[in-house]
Length: 264
Image (cartoon, rainbow, N blue to C red; front, side, top):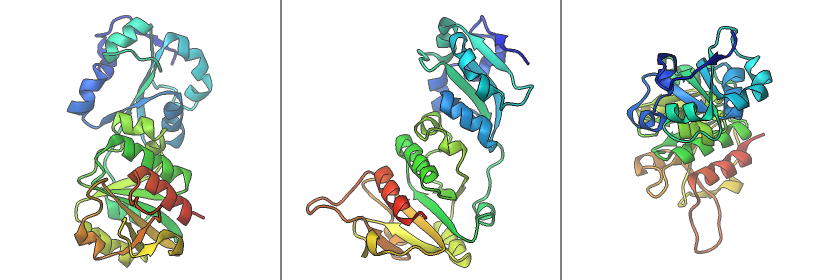
């Protein structure tokens, strides 16, 4: 299918792209927005999520030939001038590359657990509500070879536009699933042979002294409050040693240190 020119910002074919920031708040009913060249490449290469269409600035199309060859032959690729694209998005789109993807049916946490290898490193997120932190943690998970990310019901959506962008597409690549019952999830991990470390400034052991087992889960909590006490009393706790008088890191930075330490 050749590029399809869009000359009207209200063309029904590109309705999913209208007023991007407003849709970020109101929801997209099972869809998400992928933004930028690298993220589009991950979306089309990883194959975890189906792309529904692509919208590109006219002057960016030629530079996407190699990436778009990875797309299904019938994927609609819409092109527009800068003025039309800005009207569609509702703000200036300097990157000029967007795609709509379909989330599909969510995978149950236990179903994802059952697909993990015998030697697995996973991240478990509790209460991560900041999209920058969510995206950065996914980026770190991809960088250090984590096999999956699990999120509780109080976390923000990894497929929020900003989270995907900050993750540099890792949120479209690293498998993830959500769970509602924290105690039940801890039990399910134990039944599957996972050691479970909770990161906390008050951790009983320095992370440098903690040993990696074949199957390991790393728990990270929201900044400020950290992980809930009801979880900390059930798990082994580890801390990242710091200079005297300073006891906390941004959760994304903490995830990078912990994943690097325990990655093979």
